[in-house]
Length: 341
Ligand SMILES: Nc1ncnc2c1ncn2[C@@H]1O[C@H](COP(=O)(O)OP(=O)(O)OP(=O)(O)O)[C@@H](O)[C@H]1O
Ligand SMILES: O=P(O)(O)OC[C@H]1O[C@H](OP(=O)(O)OP(=O)(O)O)[C@H](O)[C@@H]1O
Image (cartoon, rainbow, N blue to C red; front, top):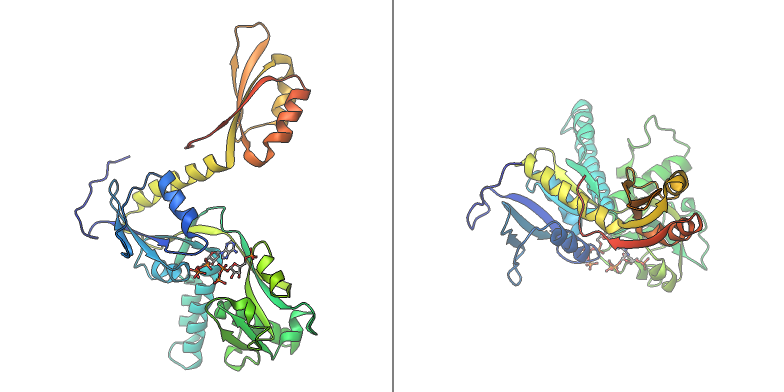
């Protein structure tokens, strides 16, 4: 790996990396940067921070805007939710469709742009920020299925995904069969009214702004507290690392991806070490086969070996129980600070 020469105090020569500036993904993203040894100092209220030990500049942006910056190639890398990438993608496609309807571009040009999508490529699933974008209605209301909401008012921050969802639903309701379900032709004629809201979407039904909403659900507590129930899922999401189609420094993108991958693996796994009789190896390796394979070292004591194996953190307790049962002794469980494969 080549050493990177650090540029000066400007953005020139630096890879631009967008990070959620607030909200649910902010802290977990900052933890990842720390784990990947991306060192920076952010001046109060400044949304740009130069990284001290790598030619990178961090750009702090709302999670919803990150796919736009990355998709247009203005920023090389970004951390955001898969839901936000899908929303941006649906928006870009709707724009091309509208331009085709107005005669600004030909159907062939629309198809070419369609296949390119939003311009964001997924590098890595980051495993945090898990949630679902769901269609929700008042628990005690008359709407039971998504089709009951056709022609009604829908509150959401995800207007393009909601538009696409209800356009497809309207096609189904109207029994208009499409060759390609994604190629919705009737967005301009949508009967369902999508009301754009920027937050606290769950309040919309109780306050009469909407009949149903399309909003994110994780634990379900917000939904429950607002007296709503989910009747369908539009998108399932986790946080992801995305890159633009032609990042300014692909080698550095790969380095960051590999460091972040290492941090995620370290967070998910623990190292389990134990001693066992060699004859029990087939049994113990079945219980804990490891990420690739266990490391086995011969002990001074005849017929005994020491085993070292990576185990998913959430499975460690039952695995220790089973290992003990088949004769493993001196079991130790250690946190992993970092990994690289
Ligand atoms: N309850 C949740 N649990 C897990 N992840 C979530 C949750 N809500 C949102 N997310 C994820 O975080 C992303 C950003 O959502 P969030 O509401 O935090 O953004 P924001 O609008 O920038 O912040 P804020 O709501 O504080 O203004 C979402 O697109 C989604 O991927
Ligand atoms: O299922 P839960 O665990 O209750 O989480 C869901 C809530 O989290 C998000 O909002 P957030 O709290 O980030 O604030 P917002 O409504 O201002 O976007 C989302 O929009 C829901 O309202």
